[in-house]
Length: 406
Image: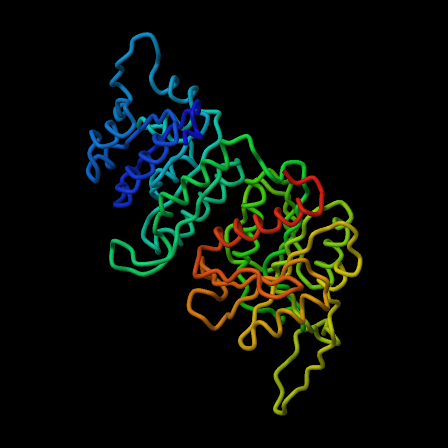
């Protein structure tokens, strides 16, 4: 099925070992009917031959800025203007730095500066390079300018390290491209509210209670809903992952401040994904000054926090509510109890003790429940894929309820 027929995609390939994945991505795009125009950096040609990508795309591969084949056009401007979507996969630390700083010293960086098309980047590099403050600053700069990212996965890297830095698999990048280019946006016109991260409860000016949440699961839902056409508001507390672009961002700290932010938006939204790890308790008294160490023990009194999920469950009118339960035992029992008490439409439960299914990783292994019991048990998937599949489930049920989802 040529779902991308009539779409032009400029595919930039920079010089990393993951360049071999660009051949698979190029092939998938061409098979889907897209007109694929490939630009390679000189370094990329050391990893994969231009002839491979020329054969797959059925177009000459652009490498040298001064190698003009058609005198009637300026090649990098022609490519920039033709693009419906500009994709760089893999994107090395070098090309990301050039993009952030506006450097145009090769065909790929020059064409990037000239395009007005949406830009999607799939980074790939060593884990320490990816975590370097300079690279992270460049990523933030580009996100603020509207560049979209398909974040790298964790795993075995070509250099021998294990960590975050592997380019996302071509199938996932392809799915992202399709969602960006197709006009059919099933959540178009819908407003989605997502909470993410771990709330912070102060003990004194320098100490607080929190948890291990990174915000990655909530961010995956925000990005997936955005790509499905929704107007997304993301309310987040303590997070360690990069913030998604293209959504309304509301930063909070405590459970109380998150509750207030949620309630201020709740009446206007159609779907809520309550993925934040909210503190159940807070300090009864917050010291105004730093608590000094004493010879004897001290006792910290904890009092109950308001329950955000239960509050919106009791107040909902037509909103569809998805809750989360991070458990360590008796998963189904606790999940169903929570779903029924808090009036969720769906509840996503996971065992955080399982490898790859806890906090701060890019994967998850979840089971979806409704009021009748288990709906679907998902194996180990990327958090983005989990979000996509759960939102598809939600859309099916929202359609059945006749609330206008396509």
